[in-house]
Length: 149
Ligand SMILES: CC(C)(COP(=O)(O)OP(=O)(O)OC[C@H]1O[C@@H](n2cnc3c(N)ncnc32)[C@H](O)[C@@H]1OP(=O)(O)O)[C@@H](O)C(=O)NCCC(=O)NCCS
Image (tube, rainbow, N blue to C red; front, top):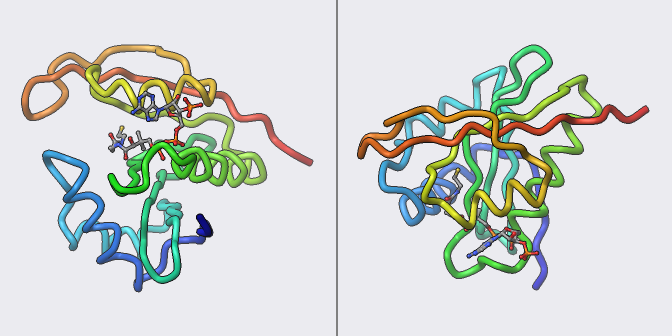
């Protein structure tokens, strides 16, 4: 399957909104995604198969830390390594921009995501009790990023 990873631009916003709707109980609004385009802290990538957005990820670049806002892959294209490619792209970007760590929150019940993060060397560093709307706890995970060059 051929696809490429590219930085997010305006033409991809409706595609990532579709994926968000398919993936999350409380998806972001289209407006929230659009405002990320002009957020100087936001770094987003999309996986594109032809013109179709099949996955996306992003983080907020805050000083020397990246805070992952999301990573999601269209249900029809999971378990094919797409999230891994997206993760590679974020790590690569951090490694050349003096971003020394990536952090994220994930639902304690979200096994696939937790396994993905562990595969990428994220460590469990804390718990935010009742963090989500349904009172589910969030696991806080972080990964150190080695700088290149
Ligand atoms: C989590 C998610 C992004 C993974 O995307 P993906 O493209 O299927 O992931 P990959 O194919 O790159 O898999 C990478 C690793 O993730 C883990 N993983 C992914 N899906 C998994 C599953 N269903 N069960 C167990 N582990 C899984 C595995 O460790 C896998 O490595 P392996 O293939 O060597 O076993 C995808 O399931 C998704 O979009 N989920 C809904 C959105 C979401 O919950 N995002 C995280 C919010 S914090």
